Structures are given as structure tokens and as C-alpha cells.
Length: 359
Image (tube, rainbow, N blue to C red; front, side, top):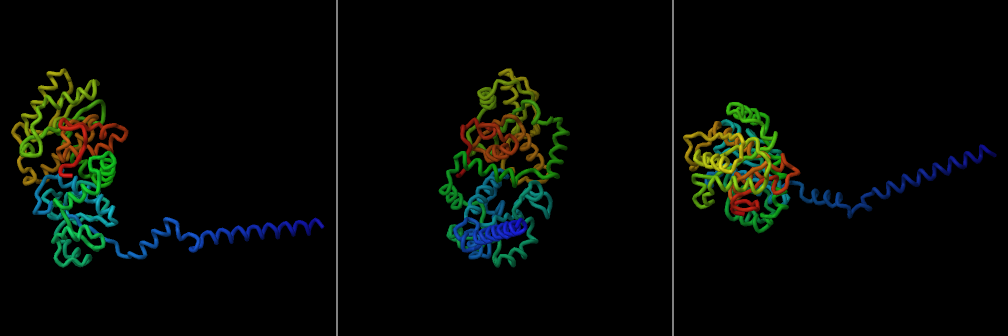
């Protein structure tokens, strides 16, 4: 009798296990998950087996501009086209800022996680792979806003920038944070760039600006005062610093294309009793940058990126938000000073709010 009872219990347990398996199989069947997000995504992918692509030409010959402008606009275009469901590819073959003849700006100095076209020797493969007989001819704006077009070729152009400004609140904190996330992924300095930056800092006896309390100033001069910005004297930058913090500052760094601006800031620091050690990479022979993108050799590129790294690392950054360099630095600072307020302790003498010129 005991054995019969044990056998009945064993059969009962097996039946329950079988029912449980059937329930799981039923829940997991395709008929029961039609409305799940994952299923919807799979269906959409099946309907569009070929991904849509956008190739962005960095430094298009028709739009000469500096590195800050090109990188800021590249990131904003990436946001737009990714939100349109498109892969984003960047062609750096036409841009004068390069690592060498075969390696362009992004691959040479940064950490892009999207596809990069480094040199014109790759163009025949691009024409074949994407069926672009006339590459690198740019797509029309009508093609760009038509999201069904399989492959687009674009660059920094006014109609697309206006389209971006209509699609996003480009002066919002949300847009800043999205742009910062893109910069933190794709515009980190790679190992060979960091090695070069450390070499430049060592040669100029510049310490680690992540240590102690440090401040970095970016003072615009030269052609940047022709339409983009009015002139702000060095005293304005120091006054902005003193409005932010009363802490003792250990080291100060001044980046500018004009040595006179470095002297202005140094005098203002002295006059306001800010007793920091002052550093700069600006030589006494520099009297304002005019069309600096035309002199974009590797040495000048490393020097510029070394300045940028110090502007990023400093405890406080004081510059202008009407500068593409200032806007880009403020994004990259978010990667280092994640918990700091006000755009990762980035401040403008021109305005309190971060934005991108032209958006």
C-alpha cells in the first residue's frame, strides 16, 4: 500500500512538471509574443533587411573650418542620422588634419566606434559597396530629409544644420548630455595621442591638471573675433573664476592663439591675488590665429590636442561658449568630471549657457 501511494505521488509530480513545461512553451510561442517590443523590433528588421547609411565627409573642401567646428558638427549630425535609424560613417580623407598620409584625424587621434574612411584609396570600395557611382558627390537636402533613401552623402552645410536645430532643442541640458555621451565614446584620445600629449606636457613642465585645484582658460583672439565673438579682456576670465570659487588654485593654464592674451590673464591673476603657477603652450611669437586650419600639420595638431587635454582635465574651465573649442571641451569634460555641475564645471564669459554655434 505504501509503495502504491509513493507511485501515485511520483506520477502526480511528473504530470505537474509536464504541465509546467507546456505552459512555458505556450507562453514562449510566437503567437503569444506578437506585441512584445523585441518581436516588433525583429519584424521591423525583417522588413528592412538592408540598413540605411549616411556617409559624412569631414572637412569637405567646400566648407573649410577648424577642428572644433568640424567635430562638433559631426557629433550633431551623428545624433540626427542615428535617430533617423541610419548607420553613421565618416570620411576623413579630405580633411587636412591627419596622423599621416594614410590615417586621418579620427583614427589617428581618437577612438571612433563607427566606420571611418581614412584615405581616398578606399573610395573605389565605397563606390562599389554602396553603389555610389559619383562618390563623394553630396546628396541633395531633399534626399537627406527623405528617410527612405538607402545611402546619403553629406557634410557640414547650412540646410542640414537648420534641420537639426528644428529637430532638437539644441540649447537644452538634454541635448548637451546626449552630445557629451557621443563625445565620451567616440572622441576619447587614443593611446598614441595620449603618449604625444604626455611628451608635450613633460617638455613644458606642465603637471597633471587632474590633481589639486586647477583652472584652464581658453582666450579667443585672431580671426575668431571677426563676427563670432567680441573681445573679452583677460580680466573678465579671472573675474568669472572668482565668481565661481574662492578655493586656492594650484595651477593655471592659458590657451590662446595670441601671447598678449596670456599676459593679460597672468596680470589679472596677479592683480586679483590668485597665486597659481601659470602654464601655457603659446609662444611669444604668436599674435593671433588666422585661418589656422590651413596650417594643420601633425606638430600643430598634437599641440592643439595637448591644449585641449589640459582644458578638459582642469578642475574649472573658463572660456566662451560661442567658441567651438569651448563647446567641445565642455562636452569632453563630462567624461572626466561626471559629478560636477554646470556643464562639468565649464563656464563662459560670454554667456552662462552652452550651445553650438549656428544651431
